[in-house]
Length: 99
Image (cartoon, rainbow, N blue to C red):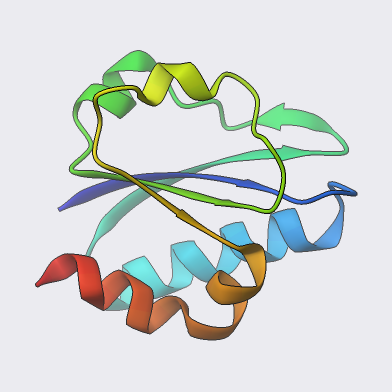
């Protein structure tokens, strides 16, 4: 399974990057491919390409705010989660999508 994700929080500092980190660690533990775009105080980093998005089996948006350029995910299997839920229960969230 290939997952792409976008993380963003209201201040764009700690939680944006913490969520990206836990997603990457959980995916690695489960043997799942993941690429995470962060939309934080430093701007948009690790930008997801159209190829990344089209080849993804799942898009996870981990954000409590509106993300930039959300329209690029139209027609793609997209799931939205709060930053808190990703930080506290990422393993359960990813496992749910693997079954």
